Length: 396
Image 1 (tube, rainbow, N blue to C red):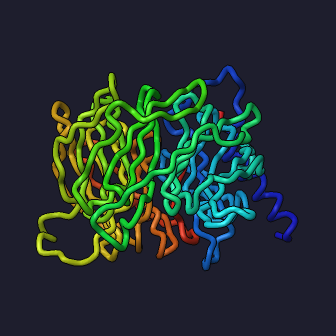
Image 2: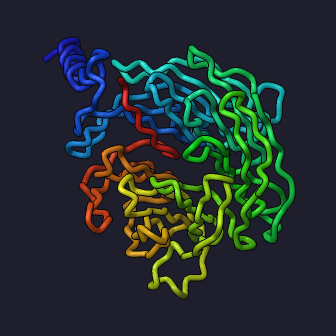
């Protein structure tokens, strides 16, 4: 078969795989095993990566099919997809953007037929080293955490998916007990509450979860009446995940390798600590090496919580969640079959967990036991340079 014919046959195969995305407005309800587009954010500095990579994910069999480079971009580490499936947003985790000491945030239009991304806009995050991005529940605003800058910002989304200048910016201040890593503020995560009335920010440098009143009409932030929740000194809060019922929130502490369960009160945005547990099993009770917990997620069923461990441990810990109390019980640790699981994502069906191993340049797929929450490798391993974030997109 000559080259032209091979390319033609490959294009037909790709079109067949992507056909479910090109449905009419009448076909609104997704079938259980309808494929998803998957985007992977990466680090491009000192790696072979070119930017954001696209894949097709079949939840029926738990397999990724490469669609190649979706967009070339500098250090597009963390990603967030718009709920309408038309746009993708990425922070560019850099320290200088133009003449500013700042990172950037990029917006892209998604081509549902090919998975390719078209750059719509790129604006300054007003702080260096942006490391996390999310959208509010209305899909009208992008929220960004600047790690190096120790600040947070909100950006309105225009009708065409591009970003307007910041509607809110807050500079954190203070420090904590670790003079090397907590010499100042380091905002590491930001997201809105389930009812979209509050924005919460995890600051590793302050050992605090800061709570702001969020205006979904104007995209503004104001300190809450109860402005923060404290974690253990030196814990280093990194990411937060809400329980699907909205009553509990779980904070992963990077430097302590722990998860703190909070009772969340929607009426006033307050967090009340319930329990702090280690992400490391009892088999590691004498472990004295570095602790670098990275990612946290609650299973869509609300029955399980997962957290990843880096620094040579390279596992994902699985917890069961008490349905009434919201407390956690560590069940087991599962090797990620790679190095440095900086991120992982549970697919929208809840059947698979995809672990992004940054330093071994791969994504390993695990099947989730719906009864026990245990992870078992499917044998599917996808090579991708320096993966940092996995985002699923249901294209309508």
